[in-house]
Length: 259
Image 1 (cartoon, rainbow, N blue to C red):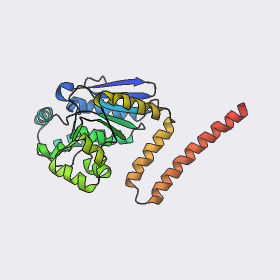
Image 2: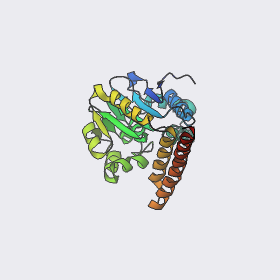
Image 3: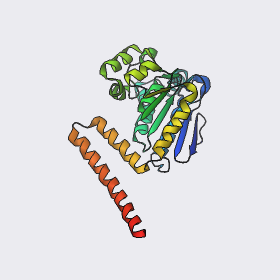
Image 4: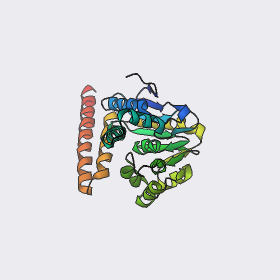
């Protein structure tokens, strides 16, 4: 698929995905939705790329959420039935699942507005860097739909705690960068002009690691989100460490034989 609403560049083991509808603050229309699904599906078997940086084009923001005008036109064309709308909603939400199952850690570099779907894309990333002018918002309820959407009921409270997540989903209030950092929604804050350089530096730090180790680490962190006890978490960790130690020991023995 040729992309028109997103840009993707690869340098070494690091890929940079840019949401590229700056005139609409990178709001997700139907075309971007399909392109993002295609992009993240391709990453599932892209073992050459170790890390993905996710950012937004333009000065105004990372992503303003769902393009409601475009969505309304699409629903009108296909018929505004609960079944059709449910199928479109389920397809849109596939993006979040693909982000969590791809083997690459995702670094979100968020500037300006991260609203609705934009905040969900940031939450589904592994590490969130934000500029000091960033604004996060669970905007779903502000457009007349349910206040928990696009994995926010699953991811948000795990990041900020249940009470704060409930407040954000019920009110749809905007959360400035400093508050986002205080509650754990943003992991680091930087000046706008330093944001991408800091994302690049972090990506290089990760890219230096074993790609397979990064993959297994993301897998076990995902499993840990749902592990019912420490026993299950330890079981996954022990499996991963056995794989990696075996690989390291084999490399060591090969080096000894060659030496």
